[in-house]
Length: 143
Image 1 (cartoon, rainbow, N blue to C red):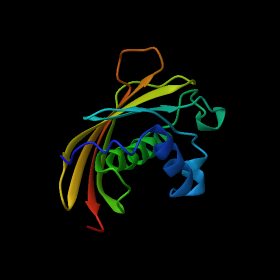
Image 2 (image 1 turned 90 degrees about the vertical axis):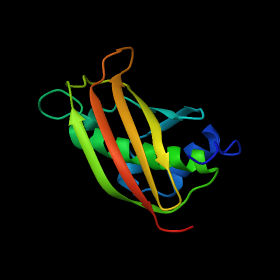
Image 3 (image 1 turned 30 degrees about the horizontal axis):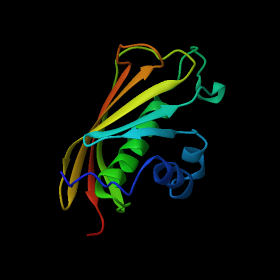
């Protein structure tokens, strides 16, 4: 894995979340809350627009959040944003997420010259049980 980029922190991550993603991803309201040498932590704030008819946070929102926070976490690890594309996204919906804040942890498994792999876990805020687990593979489109 590339060395953790100390110049890329919470402010840069939150700026990136507002600048490079599609408007509907920006509307998720994702917030970076911290980074370390293994990955990053994020918050998906409560939003009634993300709750489906079954009364739980919809899977599309959590899968999109996992993909998005992975890209931002890789930027933090690289010390800058590198254009990349998702080549694989596997999501496991382990238990329903009740409406409310969702805590997200992204851990970089491998960060190479051309490919990167990230594992994400999502939990209802205050709950220790994983509700959503995802693994992603990314291809870097630039050096």
